[in-house]
Length: 191
Image (tube, rainbow, N blue to C red; front, top):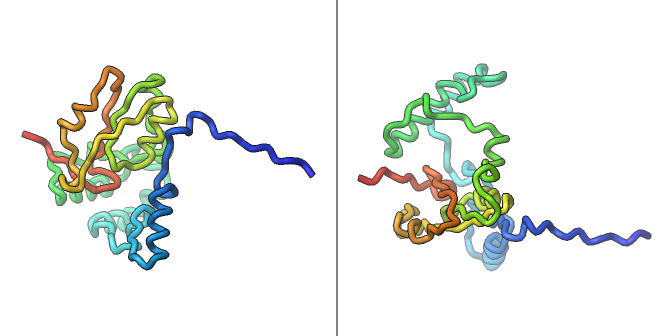
């Protein structure tokens, strides 16, 4: 019988966290076992909790399905981009137009271009709570994710002073996700 060798994780993974499977998820499971009702919005299936795709988007997808089966324009099909603009306008986001909406290709969505931006040890400010990909992308590319708070008491809108207080000589970038994922907060222009 051969002895199994232990595989040591890469040092590059030392600061990578994914709370869907981490301490927070284990705590939620423990609370559920104690009889508490837990709504797990972290699994990526909003339909299971009654959230529906806006009707205009659903209709645009149905009516244009034949156009999306092959290669499409690099920005995506026009009716779908138009439906995104209508949804954003309903949320109060002004100034968006179909020409500025781009479909996100999976290979680009899964690998943000942090490696081209940050040198080892550079800091990238990331919203908290955040979609784990941003923190992981920074850390995996030898940068250091520094989280700026988006408090529930402020409707998850970050305070520019909180962000400014975190700036250092090592700050290379600030990640702003609008509308925010995972909170859904929409940042409005300050006047």
